[in-house]
Image (cartoon, rainbow, N blue to C red):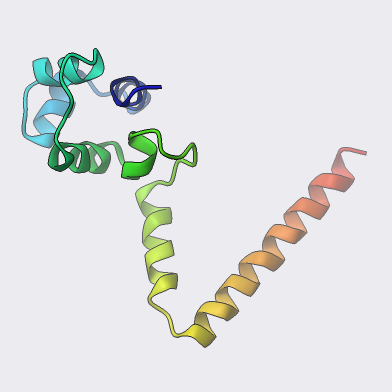
Length: 111
């Protein structure tokens, strides 16, 4: 999937018009339409603004990952990264325990 296709799908998911997205990133709806159709490619600065406006990571927007991280999740990851190694290890162990619990519940629920 192209960056233009990603922009279009995410924009529609957010129920934004091309004009509304254009206004949010400081350009016009016509330019957003040209990005979506692959006629022109946005600069990295514009990609950053579009990712912020659509509340996704740049990696997701450009198709580098299929993992859609919203801004709240990214903020949490940044907060965890800023902790001391001891506190970071504790938080990650808690996450691992919660994930294991959910996986176990899911495994038993399907049987």
